[in-house]
Length: 164
Image 1 (spheres, rainbow, N blue to C red):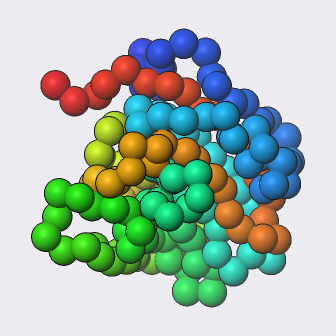
Image 2: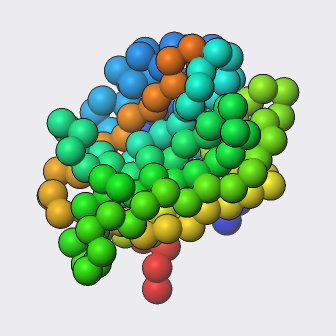
């Protein structure tokens, strides 16, 4: 989409366009930090029980907001149990999830991180919008997970702010 590409601030920071292991993809993501990012990801579930992406992740994994797919339950969800949430009186904002069918065994995510807002569109059929307020200033990383899955494509761009 031209509108989305217009929000990108420069060339892609990471581009993977062939089957890659989760660990190799994470090595490519290791230097990517930010809270204004656009991530396009496709993963083949393979034998993974859960797979997905952590955003706003601290280096030691103390904080993260997890976008996940549970293959047994066929559910897409967001786990905010370790999101930090310094602006909330409730320290654990829990897990929200809903039904989603994979397409040819693949999960495609189009994720926008705009400071505290996280929007994820999955397989063009479902979306999740949530907020996260990390308490740590270093909660800016990305990491994939899903032992037994394969990354089939991944692109990450730095973005200008979307909010007015």
